[in-house]
Image: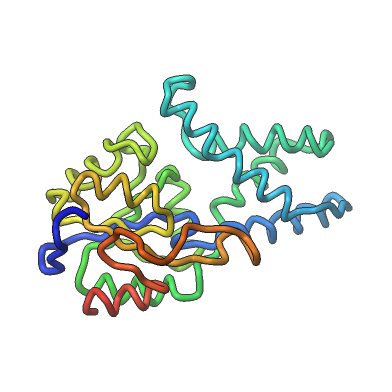
Length: 241
C-alpha cells in the first residue's frame, strides 16, 4: 500500500488536465458541431470526437517507444485529425480551417467545480498542471477556462510522456521538492499508479461523465490511493482547505 500519507508533508499538487480539470469530450463535440455547421454537414460528431481521442494514446506511445522523435500533443492531435478528415471525406478545407479545428483542444471547458476548487487548494498548496499537453496548449486552455495556476508544467519539459517516470521527477525537480512533498491529482488510475511508484502522494478525483453518459471510466471503490474525492471541492475539503 506504500507509505502512510502525511498531509503536512505535501507542498505541491500537480494536476492531470484532460478529463480531470476540463471536460474534453463535451467541448470537442461542441467544436465539431460548429465545424459541421460551417461545412453544411451533420454526422455523428460524438463518434468523431471519440475516434479523435482514441488516437491520442497510440500516437503518444509511438513517441514513448522511440518510433517517432519528440512530437508535441498539438502535432499528434493534428496527425490523428488529418486521418479522420480523410476518413470522413472532408477534403476541401483550407489550412486555416484545419488548424482552427485542431486548436479546439485549446478551448476546452472546465468541469463546474474546477475553478472554485482549484482556487481553494491554491490558498495552501502550490498548484501546477502536469499534463501531456504542450505548454502553449495548457496556457491557452487555462486562459480560456479561467483556470489560475502557480506554474504550468508539461511532459514537454521532460521530453517524455506520462506515465514515464521522467515527467513526474522533472516536475518535482523544477519545483525544488522531493517526490514525498508532491501529490498527483488525476481521474485516471494509470497516471496515479505511475506517480505512486515514485513516492508521490496520490488523489483520485471521480469524473464519471468524462466519456459521456453510459461511458466508462476507472472504478471508484477500493482504490489504493491516498485520497478519493468526488470533485475538486471535495478534494479541497479533504486536504483541509
